[in-house]
Length: 241
Image (cartoon, rainbow, N blue to C red; front, side, top):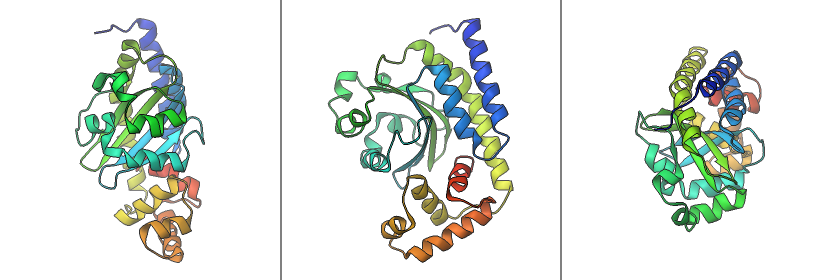
């Protein structure tokens, strides 16, 4: 096992301190997390990925807004349960940080439809996921991506060093968000996840077989429950709920 140096541990503590201090406002966990962890791990694209294991849908907060389009999220969802990291982490509390290369050879992975239709399209060759919340329905992970060199053992151990502390911050933030108002219903959460994927009210109505006015009413209730006034603020709160 790779042994982290004192400098590595100081850098990990600095990242945790920055993320913890940034959690003072709703939604900042995701934003501060992807920014700080990108520097710690040396990731070219870092996301907080929230996977609904029942609906096979992923919502994403990125350190490079717009790097993953709604269309590309739809492509990811198409191969949701074929993804090696989803299969390794989904519905498995206590899951540890993994690289795709820990689960399947790079050559074999690059022959898959998932790689060619999604990763090749966004210019990524290597990925590593750090799960911070796993239950029977949700998988929440920080995901690190690079086009260049593969993630090494040092980066894997750095991720593992901070993972349990980030899991605690996520749980604490979720408890605070839930204390602020009534919990979202399954349909309200589904609507908000489609909003996070960049869909308009009309798009969501078409996907869910509802009227646009019905989606508007769902959003009004969501705003009230989360104590926010805009779609952007509601999406940010989603990642703390």
